[in-house]
Image (cartoon, rainbow over all chains, first blue to last red; front, side):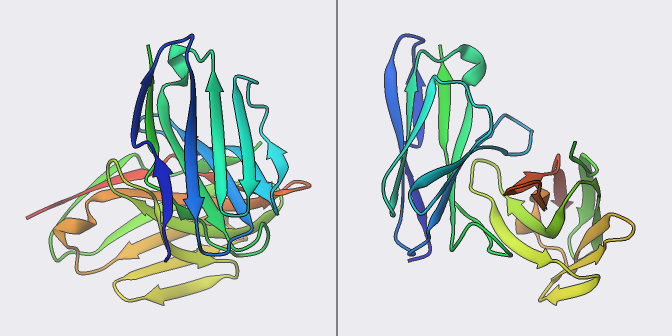
Length: 114
Length: 111
């Protein structure tokens, strides 16, 4: 199994809603990532978890709250988002958080904030 | 800051060869990756270079010159399915490791 699975694939939410994005991998990877990708732009790093601990927060607003319940799961909790937060949210994993490990990406959640 | 540049769009015909360039100015360089991303899909890994020179993998090859801050991805015998965005990404170490993506190049392969 070399897949990173993300759910849901599409999400529409209002600015007062609370929702969560989920990511799962069963490759035994110990590093997991959240990226944000706006249309026709490159992915931008949001968070890095290494061994289930938050290692990087790229100055992401607190309306985005990551969680890593165990080594296979990564969540992104959303609350009081703004329309400009509409984007493709990509989860990725790698064997470790160092060296030349390649990232395996999920297919993403396309988020629209109304 | 980190600066990674690629051409925005390229076009080529089926069966041809295309070279996608990437120039970078980053601190703490620790390797360069190329990813392919079809519209609406996840980026998939193509290649990794950390030392100067050419890495060949089937129809795809990637070259790196660290002194020039330059890389290219070479695609041979183009197929229609190669129409996609190609992302250059540099692993930087500025106290911690992270992958910084370039702007991406949209490649359109026509019959």
